[in-house]
Image (cartoon, rainbow, N blue to C red; front, side, top):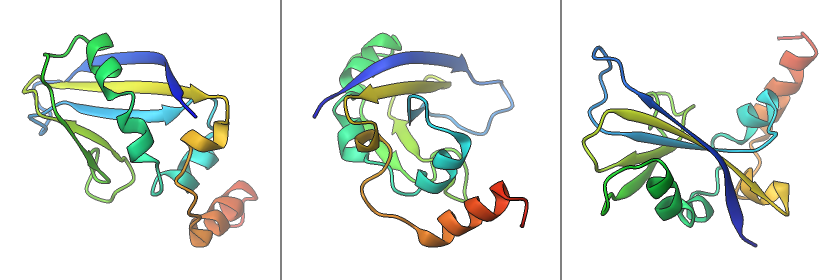
Length: 127
């Protein structure tokens, strides 16, 4: 299965931002808030890596930019996984991807049942 890039949004960091390197966050198209909440700790980073060269090109980042997957790319708690790029440009790049099989781009097949239970409780107003 292959995935394709749907959109890319590039935002320049504010001068007060603590990050020195560009972050690239990848999310599946049409993923709900709750799905994101449940799946964010089990993203298929190896699959996402396949679209990196094209995403880097479309985001107009320097050639030769390298990327490292980090569960804590966006914050220290691990809720914002993404790629940390070696280029020293201060940007956040948001990539939306799609696939013939939507589940393929959402998670790596593991399910954190504690998070599922919490998401259901929050959705039902029980938490």
